[in-house]
Image 1 (cartoon, rainbow, N blue to C red):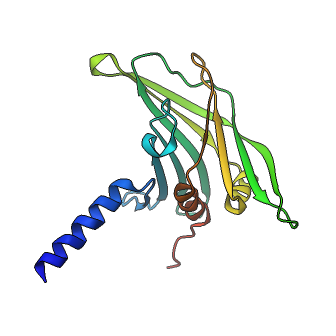
Image 2: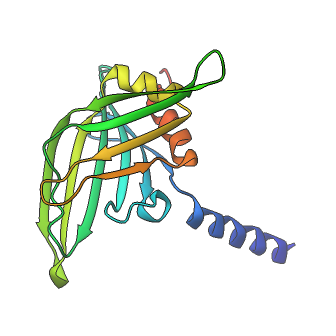
Length: 178
């Protein structure tokens, strides 16, 4: 019995390291705000220039929601995010079963940069997710993001299916009543 339990735990840990994203729900004990997030790491994004991408939803005690898409990276070269909105390509099937795509914008909010040990610079940027974009992502079959940099070429990557499924859950999340 113990052996099968240990094997099940090891299997779960191995699966967890392969997963592309993980939903976290946290309630701030100080002000009661709730944050729901799902982060995708670089290994699963097939985008060497972005370390992680996070879909983040914050709900304050009054029920007001804010949606953000956050990016972070660490590099020895200066990979600094542009203040340009990112392009979000939404692909879904129409009534005839044909793929249709449209490109929407996620407006720039703010960015940060910090020098680290060993010559690395960590940079991050936050982009707003308007309600119309949120609704389109929820219905999408595929999402492709194009992020712009001030000092390097832009980066385009497909959000992995597993991560997209979790991002949809973040966007749809409603806190329990009571």
